Image (cartoon, rainbow, N blue to C red; front, top):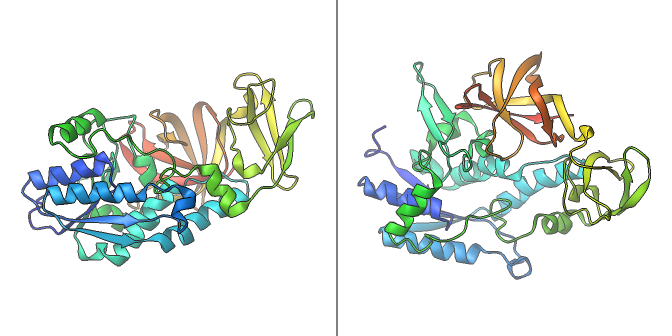
Length: 356
């Protein structure tokens, strides 16, 4: 693709990845405009939000390359859309992925409505690649770095969003990105990668849930014996497959089931009990990124890990499928996105919500 005649917007987060994106584009003789998406709770002192430092870093990098930086406030869109989605899911006992929806609703959604529509391409620091097939269709394809690959976080974007997406470092390994940042003396070259939910900075996820849902104490019961093991502060603080943070004696314990109506969490003793695994499970409302439905033989991810798991898809109509995994998968939980790839885990077809 010839980028010289394209209007390019770069989303700078303050992190090293998006900073190297800007360097790469400038190195090619381009002069993109930079944007920092401001999303953070209004009570910044209470939340210890890192957005101020992020903005300082983004400002420094944009100035280094002589590009203007504009701050786009998407605070209300994030808290009204992504937070609403997250809280609705966890209240219902499901396991949502806010990062997936953040890309669709905010980075390539709300930003596009406010400023992105003025540009041909929106460049981000995602570890993902794209390719055009013989029919001219654009595909979301994986990064060569399996640990950093972020196609799973992009698996709910729309075709028009993918058309405008540009991933200038998607073909690199993380070490290469760090080396470029250090060589170019970028202010954030040694800055740690952000952890947790996008845009929440240093906010703890459980604090985020507590802020909006409060607490709802209930029983923790051993699945096999029915014995009361302890108490929990709210079923939304625990996910299927969870091993840590239960605060129960005599562990390890694993969350294997949740009864939302009775507000009971069931746990099982020992290491990786059979009840924590599933080999066959349904997914609904499959979202195809570019309109192409997945083949029968696939690989998949249900969480952000380097592994792609082989499976077979059985269509049951109306965009729903039964996933038949080659081997049992640990921690399959309703509400998670099952991200579907071809059997070479190269092309990402999209994702559907697990409905076990």
